[in-house]
Image 1 (tube, each protein chain N blue to C red):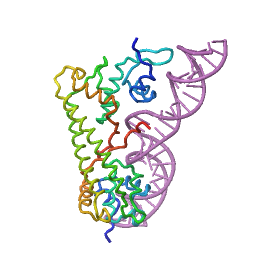
Image 2 (spheres, rainbow over the protein chains, first blue to last red):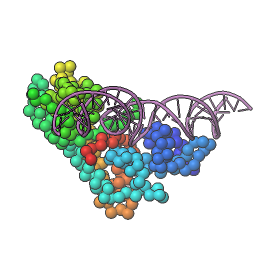
Image 3 (cartoon, each protein chain N blue to C red):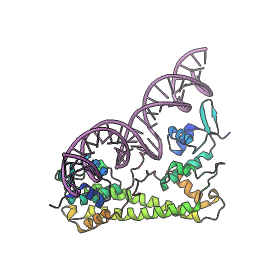
Image 4 (spheres, rainbow over the protein chains, first blue to last red):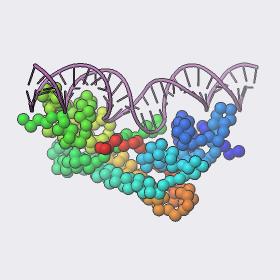
Length: 143
Length: 143
DNA sequence: GCTTGACCTCAAGTCGACTTGAAGTAGCAC
DNA sequence: GTGCTACTTCAAGTCGACTTGAGGTCAAGC
């Protein structure tokens, strides 16, 4: 039997066991059985967790990700949705690129105050015009 | 008097009035006075809101942004912090770039199931290895 | 056979950035 | 002076993805 203990899965996937239980509750993963109380998993769960991590990074919610699995557990990913998400990502990437360049400029800018730098002011105008979207904070990483 | 009514500021900045009140509570902006009960703002608040929006997009929290203003209200932005954030953004951008390309590939991939596509599996392995970070959801945009 | 410690369940708490709701008020048009 | 309406305050609620805590259980090692 090649079953993995929850602790082993947690270790290998780099997530806390509480997260695995939470994912199970959400229907994202499933234990194949128990040894005593303890969940046992098929090694395939690691691939699935990777898929989940990827989806999260791409900006999908857990609920959306849950819909990407067919009832039999195989991925059922709508190609059109992927394209859409790819375009979204692309927009976001360009946005962040502009912002990064601006930050770099501001960091190097010799103007005594950032408000006196034309480049900075131009960026600000762009931001005011709604050229930039508002993302949220990152999840807390491992401590 | 060139004072702006809160509704006007909300309209021009593209944020709800409740957000302006919230920002005031957090010390991010300040009304210059009241007309009756209603807050009046100096037009400069728009620039400040743009700065806040920019900071949010760059991934700063409101508290962090609050520290970027000197007591006199002028921006006081640590250049080193800007560089640091620029590098962070850069990393994130590259990460998202890889992900975008992978999504595009997966969308175009002829394999019957994504799991049978070598490229997809390779990406998955990278994700599993922790090559990707987990971002959070976006703020709700304008409806 | 008894302890130990890692797991279990379930409810509740956390975090950040707002939003919502109830109850009140003031400027403006009439 | 009356009403309308858009504002006001303050407390509480929301959302997603988890985490935490209390109290319970069980396989394994001694």
